Image (cartoon, rainbow, N blue to C red):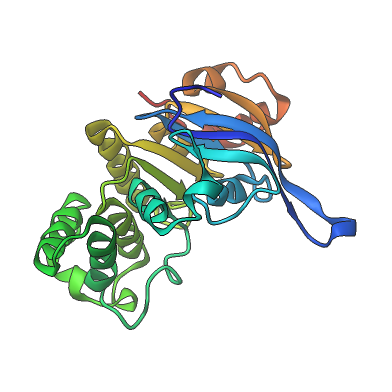
Length: 264
């Protein structure tokens, strides 16, 4: 793997199901993410992309292979509290399901304040200031942050989920299907936000989606997955205009009318 990689995935395998009938959700995947890189991972449902994303942030353990962050194996980082805290400060994950992401009994401010205090060691006052700053970054009305999750729209809740990840200013952000269930207008604002954050902060992004146009807009590099394997990996423009694998070509044909745009 690249010696300068921030995140390195090496020959990773993940199985699901009982031993006799298990299947490889992720099958021998290798890739790297460098500082500031915006990497898109696309594929249909069941391709293994979400399982890969969860392994990247330590929520799933690979059956074989290794994932490392800044040259240290993920398994090693997760063993000790100090390194776990450091990992959570540096790497944040945003999932599609925001309903289960927030405690329904706590205000959104409380949920976003928690990582600012726990991971950054901020006082309650400083954490609140960080929350307000991050909420403003996402273009959300200040009054909304003191509501409960059920009191805001799905699009607003997704932006609050991103705010909770960004409040610690991570060096790597992994997003799994964060816009697929949202209206096109809401998708656009979130995609622009993610791209701007990475460009301005130098953070890396792994953007996982079955939506090729959205992924191509945000990301400068694309990985295409099918049946747990990487079938294509290259510069976004190259993949869009000169696909090498028939499956990639079929994805492009399906989404060609959706306004796919290459990333800068």
